[in-house]
Length: 206
Image (cartoon, rainbow, N blue to C red; front, side):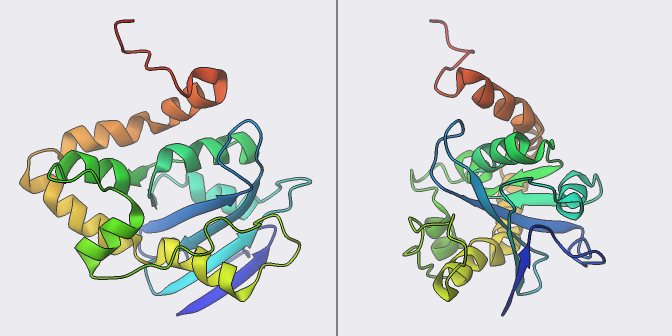
C-alpha cells in the first residue's frame, strides 16, 4: 500500500479514473454541516493505493478533484455518502455523481443486523479488521501525522470490495433498482441537509 499526500488538489494527469470507480471519503473538524470545515478528501482507485488531498481551506480551489467528483463516467463509492456529498457540495460547490453508498446498500440487504458501520462491513464482507483510533483527531492540523494518513487511507482502500459484495447481495434480493434510486436522490438529500432539514423527515405524516 502506498499513501500519496497532495496539497490543495489532485495532480494533473492522475489516474484515479482508470477503473471506472473511485472510493471517496472526507475528514472534517466535526460532524456539523453548518459549523465544521472540510479538511481532507481521500480517494482510491481500488488498486491498493490511496491519495489524500489536504484541502486549502482559504480557497477550496481544487479543479482536478472537482472534475473527478463530477465525472459522469466514474462511479464514486462512499460509506455514508449523505454526509460526504453534503460537505463536498458546501465547500467545493459540486454535485457528486454517480454515487454508490455502502451504508445505504447495507441497510437494504443486511436486514439481519443493525450494525452498518464501515468497520462492521469490512469485518463481515471482507474479513478485514479496521483500526478507527484516529477517527477523532485534529484534521485541521497544518501537518498530518503518519497515523492520520494511514487512517484516512484505510477508509477508502476497501470500499471497492465492499461495493462488489453488496452489489451482489442487492441483485440477489432484487433491490438493485431501489438502491440506485436512493443513490440518485443523495444530492437532493444533501441540499435538504444544508438547507436546514437535516433532522426532519419531510415524508412523515406529522
